[in-house]
Image: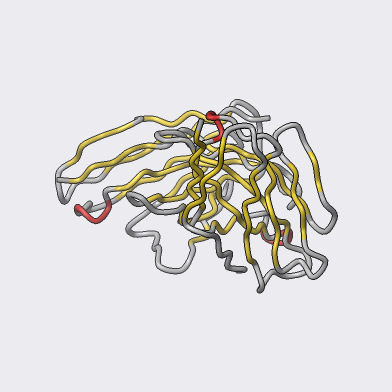
Length: 115
Length: 111
């Protein structure tokens, strides 16, 4: 199994600012993902964080708004840029091996409130 | 990406079995079916996954229809700690296993 930590656990930000969320995995993993969970909703995949290359974004999400870095096999960051109140959500990091059979583990999430 | 459909909520009595259904009629032949559950203020927790055959582990059982268009998560004896939102998802084998989540079923357990 993998243990995933996220920083910060929560934050309150002003409109127009940016926040970078960090995700740390306690073991080397192949795949890392970022999800958004809006209040009372399910999880929506934002992007796959690729090590050493640009992230792969899902439909409706763009790099300018959600830049992602993954400098090594255990660490990734997600930045929420030029925030608006609509960005208020929980942002979750997850990690797994490459095989489709591998279990995906999730971090505890970062609760973001934009005023 | 295969879409999944689940009932919004279900109720169960403590120590009784619970059957949580999921429809995934557009699932491809290589997609796995994954189940996760989420307690309030926590990240999702892995429950079980499978491809074609029924699967059992210490937490639950997964029954997969022969045509793979639906599946059922079975909790054999519900406890109060099983009260959570249960998500059915499909994982693409060929895209690194990214998961597409359904809307989830909120399970409440009555003592």
